[in-house]
Amino acid sequence: MSSATDRLSTVTGRLDQSLQPLADGFNRLFGDYVGELNGLQFVLVFGSLAAVLTAPFWGTFGLVRAMTVAAIWAIFAMSWDIQSGYTGYISFGHSVLSGAAAYTTAMLIHNVDPGLSMAVTIPVSILAALVVGLLIALPSLRLSGPYFSLITFVAVLIFYRLIPSFSAYTGGETGIQSVEVFTYDPIARYYYMIVPMLVVAVALTFIARSNIGLILVSIRENEAAVNAAGIDATKFKIFSFALSSIPMGIGGVLLVHFTGGVDPTTFIAVDRSIEMIAMAVLGGMSSILGPLGGAFFLIVLRDYILTDLANLSSPARWTIFWALVLAVLVFVRDGLFRKLWHGLERYGRGRT
Amino acid sequence: MSVLEIDSVTKRFGGLLAVNDVSFEVDRGEIVGLIGPNGSGKSTVFNCIMSIYDVTEGSITFDGTDITDHRTHEVVNSGVSRVSQESNPIESMPVGGNIQLFTLPNSIVSFGGGASDAEIYEYAARVDIEDKLEEMPDELPHADIRRLEIAKALATEPELLLLDEPFAGMNQAEITELAATFERFRENGMTIVIVDHNMGGLMELVDRAVVLNNGDKLMEGTPTQVTEDPRVQKAYLGTAEEA
Ligand SMILES: Nc1ncnc2c1ncn2[C@@H]1O[C@H](COP(=O)(O)OP(=O)(O)OP(=O)(O)O)[C@@H](O)[C@H]1O
Ligand SMILES: [Mg+2]
Image 1 (tube, helix red, strand yellow):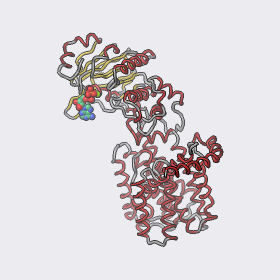
Image 2 (cartoon, chains in turn purple, blue):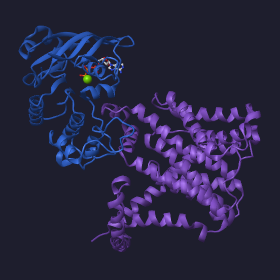
Image 3 (cartoon, protein in one colour):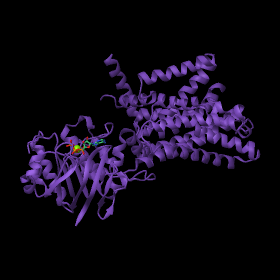
Image 4 (cartoon, chains in turn blue, red):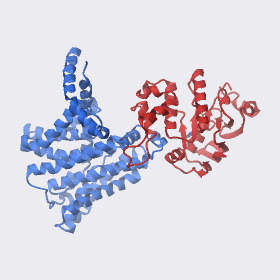
């Protein structure tokens, strides 16, 4: 057994060494900003990137559609991660943020002017997500302990109930379905989602690997030590929530222009918040790219493999989805992609 | 000129009077001992200075500024750093990372900044743990964990260093060495207040001592005055101290 892994790591070690020059080139240019890679990790990152960028040329319609949805959810999962995963102040209400952006877009079109250009609705909607984010963060993050989580949870419940109460403006249970989609071309639509996702991924990875990320993790590990270091932990907690709200707003806008409308169940329900957490946890919290991987893994599984390939019913798909999340929580607590990453680190080093 | 003024500070926890109308001053460049039996209120005084607790009454002035209502990070940034009685390093970060955190600027737009590796090495070297920067806190012996706590405090570049029982759990050789380290800090211009419930070793190090008992200030004076004072001897009598 151990001689098998020995042999494997000799092979992978050699493979790693032959790839190292590529990784070194990357490290020289970007290592200071996003961290250094070994040869195998370089192949994982850039192989996945190439696969994602070329998916419409080799993937089936169903797969590309699933990956389009996954790109949006990857933004949600990464946004949740920079706040909840890093600081340890777990939000159960992040769908309020994406929902706020999506509803702002739809309500502007429905109530103000159907001809409003996206150049207006998109920035206003992202700003709305930020404002709602600050409204939740400012009072709740001054408190320590479980209050923050409870407040985010209640916020999503209130928001969900508010929608039908103002049905003249919000369209009630059925929502507003008159939002323009970006495009009907599935290939173009795919890139409309993938490009913003990659931008968000790079930006959040950069921040997470900077001092800011170090401070956010330290808040999770030991908030008292952060204050004792002369750093205002409360300010950074609120900042991380604001930082999370902006890409949540971007994702919300993408989703509303993907589906062509909003309704409380698809956008706000607390289930949506929990799904974001599930993706982040499955991929590996506090790593940004882990939650991205988690989103693609779970959504491609649910919407493509279990739907198109296995033809399972919706309850069966969801049962498998949650069972998998549970299994990861119990057996791979650090997340699948973090495990993979550290595995590549070990096998890359090889034995000489 | 006094750099720290504790002015009639009182701290109540519900019905418990932990610190009762205590006043004392610390001059620049001094090493002052804050001593007293267990539970006499020493750590509470430190916690009030650091704004971990709000004072019930009284005021605290540092360097001419009233810092009573400042928040913890503001107190630290004005030049006061405290080594707690309990060590609490971040277990998931190596020694170097733990020190680095204490050098980071309090700014949400500062992606870089903080100390260089060479500066972190320097902070560690001042307490002799420069060879352990890569080690994780749970791999360190007790004395090194305490040294890490001191290095973290140094990394905020304090003018005034508050040390809560820095010698606890150390052997005689370690105590002697650490006391010499504190002397060097003072020679470099730092002011130090050291809390200890044990009067013995501290008296050679300090210029002056303030004695607390049950939240009250019993007296203050030179080491000789303190050790010879009958009230102090009485306060320590019957407690398990070998004064
Ligand atoms: N957060 C708190 N809540 C309630 N009571 C407290 C709190 N902190 C301290 N006390 C009480 O205040 C009194 C003084 O405690 P303090 O920790 O300041 O003593 P100390 O002199 O540092 O003792 P030791 O030598 O044991 O460290 C004690 O009776 C203690 O139980
Ligand atoms: Mg104490």
